Image (cartoon, rainbow, N blue to C red; front, side, top):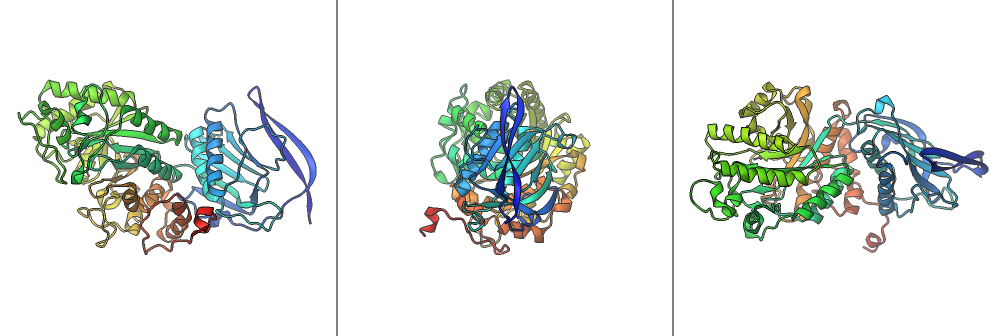
Length: 537
Ligand code: ACM
């Protein structure tokens, strides 16, 4: 057996300086199998991968260390350890001064390197005895550990040494996102989803580097966020949902918990209060809002475009000011989404007046306004963002106003469209979206100049889905493809290559108990992981 000198390293921190205490000893290097980093099914595909055809021997003698003086890095290291524990049941110490034998290290390093200037960029250097993850920010490190999680095999190789080894293919990965805004929207208004459901969705999305969660918090069928100054919104407006179920809402504490959970995963929550249309639940709670002198019935159907606020009444704007203020105070992210879609019973001039006034309110509370593409018809300033879902004409108006655009065309990016005519869940007003159609388009060349594109978003409307299993069925696997459209550069996106990598996601999705749609277009990999609960079956 070849004997090599192993440098056994223990990293620890002394007054902010990393001290490397290395001790040399004679130890046989574990002969690792030839593995090819480029063959691992990573999604989203990294910018550059260079394989060196050996492997890092992840085992019980591995420890994680992080740049301790860098904010957030310790937490990222712990997050990685927690996820690897869940995946392979291996305990990996994080930043511990230990007397135990440590032969190999995963080092998460804060680096000011110029190539890491965008906050989410990272580099992974995987050698036989070390994995170095370089990132400028903890956010970049967090994106990097998602890649590392995907590189660790589900099952160990038990023939290389006395202990179990999980070989991580060696080489180099250089990566940064194509778009800084990579979103998913969840409609919790047509059907309500619990905090636990939303957390599970956040976990799954963040694994694929999606970094924006847009919550559609109000619509005709339900108001889902507690507003302390207007309590009937949730008491009355939160009591229903599509189909006559009992609805529900987030207390402010619930919402803060979602925000906190997302933040831990470097995901920004974008709250949406849809107005002046889509407001039946608000007007049923406070009838002065619609200005027609009538108290509307609560609504549990699926029609759109029949409700509006009274856009010429100052008290309506006082109400909106309170709502935007209370929500903005709980929202650390920079955005507030005002909806603005399908206001079919609002006169055009009233609509424009309304959007202009709401924009001022949103700005007053320190947020940048997003609205569906219709808002491009108002006289808003270029700081506002249009989310293009339906009208190319509106999207073009947004570009003329030099606004940023979120590319979310319903025909391509709506997660609630049925996969095909046989899919029981979902709608098809924008078409059927099988898994290949969802992936095979190019947001960069869809009609909006690159400099105007903020990013992409995949909305999931919930008229037809009532629980997390149904949510997952429509979202997965398509949202995984959207993550790649948003993160990876066009040169790295290719359906034939992607569909193989997607098939290899099955063990992860099964381990996470995700009820994904098993599209026949994909050759789903058989799950090989060795969890006791699953082995029993
Ligand atoms: C929308 O789908 N009404 C934005």
